[in-house]
Image (cartoon, rainbow, N blue to C red; front, side, top):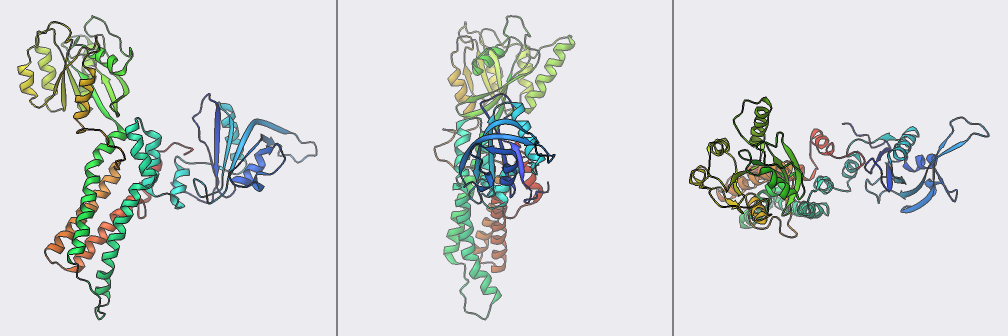
Length: 470
């Protein structure tokens, strides 16, 4: 996507639908001039003459394009208009925000009006992309903006806020400064061999590199946690028919999401919900019970269930505590042999008749938990077992900084590899030219991480995930 920073862009920045207000945002050199064309303030002053960070009451109007003495002006809506002047704005450009009445029609009519008067429709994420391209934020902060918008739990929200504040960027920039401080005399000694420039790497550079390597390793180790907190994990309830999967689903989502009856095979399709388990976003799916049947619908239900088993990050294998393990239970167990599993023994409020040595032998490392979905007993223990499969201890200690996507993790891993190569060269008393190469490569990885040296296709991929208007 070719971004032309000379254009003035516009978009609706609030969700379309019925609400209290709608916001249409403009950014660019002509934002205030367009404001003059579409806004009539109560006091008659032009928006382009207004001071920055001021709010003005009036009406959005559509003026006749025919220049006649008695040409009429049509009022579109009552509005408050906020003026923000460059460079102290989100995009570092002139920004105009029109607050109109909520609803689909007012917002769309005003957007059409500003486009007809010289703006163009913003691309997805273009406001934030301009903030990045104009140097107000780096790429880590831009990605944090998206994470804040998409955060499904407070545990995902807090790290994104810290990253938006620039805490992670500060650490990365300090690494860069430390590396540049040591690489400069090394390069100077090679470029000017006749000058008496000390270039011996020595113990100090080795200590600096080991510290940087340690910091990088901590971020890399936290990456999977950060990615999970942003994207969520997928969990599937699996088991034979009538073991209580739908009752467990309803208990976890805390309302009657799935029909529950005493009739075997009530659930025919996959039912999904997004829930919060101890701060972790979870996409949970209830599936049809696995059974032998000549019924075409039942066969299709089982096929869909098996497909979800394959894609799940974790399977809750549900067994009925009130009966002995049967053939269908064993068939389900064999289909889950290579999956991460928690064994859930449901109906524990009834007389216990289950005997699970065979199942336990198939899943020797799988945790087991007894619950009663009907009586709402044992659910906290189940939720704890679920989170323990992905996190040890607390999901996120307070103020923890972590990377939040695969792009960031890859950059850190590349940098970590180059730093370790440099450490080995110092230990082996290798050539300084090789040492310089590895440090330069490490610096380049950090540049890509914060967006100073990055492919345009990657930028497009990042910002296209934003909504239009942000």
